[in-house]
Length: 341
Image (tube, rainbow, N blue to C red; front, side, top):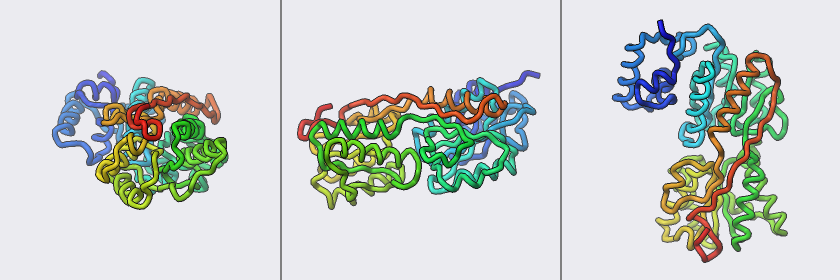
């Protein structure tokens, strides 16, 4: 009997690996027609769902789980899909778990270890703080993807990320060099110990190097969705009409901010420059195209799977990999009053 991988099922059904995983995990965010098509391929190939892993590949080997903190984060979903593809190619069985950005990924990992016997974890969008103590003593391997651990709180984990602080500084320097002084920042919690907190520090670094200081009144905490960013921006700009630039810590937030500005009669970039982060495909084709920092999702995913495999096989301890990102000036930003990249 032929053994199939999750990629084989995806190819036969004409869908992504992520979609197959969502069907097998019973997630509701798959339309009925697609779900039936995937299930038909599974029946055609005589697949049997593993009772523990809910995975397609019948193997006795250990399997891993991907925990994504942030259900609506397009960038994290893109990285996740590529991780699944690399895992399928390398024989790694992955279980998917999506949680809200306010939920605890470490408790989720402990639960999946106890209930599903997962022995490896890739954590996306994680926040490394005292909550990581929940997995102390757990016989499992951990890779933090798109996140670093600047305070060394989770020493047993490996990590794969970009230089968030350095790239955030690069963005802010670009805006300062363009004559912007009233720069707003839309991001997450500044004291959270995650990559978003590092981006905040990068903003401060750039201002200090310029002989100035960042106005904390221009920092806006928002959830990373278009809708929440849109609402936050409308409320913010009704009180801060003198702001000439916005640095958004994700491209989705930038989309929401640009929409709010247009509804308020502000032109982008002629009146307000907007910069995002992550480099999702939508930003390239949005009008105006969004200036951003592109994170190389393929390299991040490949390095994450490689690290996890080595750790699960006992071939390597914790290791930290930094991937080079790219700053991409586009149509949504420019010098004060100029409107050109």
